[in-house]
Image (tube, rainbow, N blue to C red; front, side):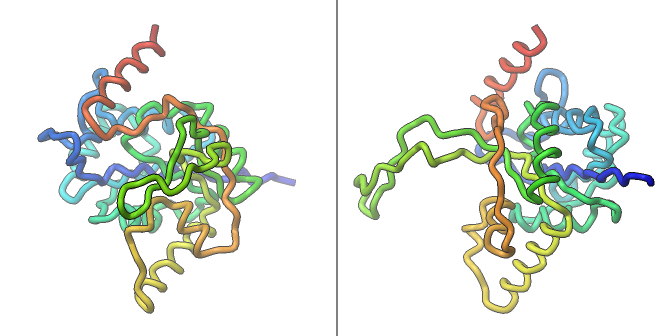
Length: 242
């Protein structure tokens, strides 16, 4: 009897404006060791045996530039390039509507985390089969304090229970689709504080009964936010190629 192989689609989110970079070039398209930042993410998924397709989400007006990046680098797995919106969760929703119909699992990844490794992709693919929802994360090592409204320390949190969340965040496609549909229904009918929608896991946590599994991330899997992050990412890439 034939065994059905799960179909994994990577959803690469590169629709941000990158205002904190203070650059005329959006951070996802900035050059990093000879390639645009987002191209490093696309290459990681392109080279992974489990990923069968990639959907790339970019800012409005940037689809042609994104297509050229894919063509120049030979990214054959990119099946669709779609435009994002003014908020990340809306951009993700656009991307989810563009994945191939035979998709079983989706790995949602920030297009400005260029140091994604094959090992981390493998962990996401393995654990999402078992749990339907998992996110890459690293334990918090700094002491974390909660402040009151006046800027004074109100509480010192137990860091042994705290994790810093990264991407990829991997989900069963029916699960994440159901979660987003429920979110949009809630927004239409009741309204919601959209500022609290900080990642995809929180949508699954609040809109479904599925528990999200934390899996080992990678301290080098940094998110490019400031010019200093570009310097660090370049250093990490050069170390890896040494």
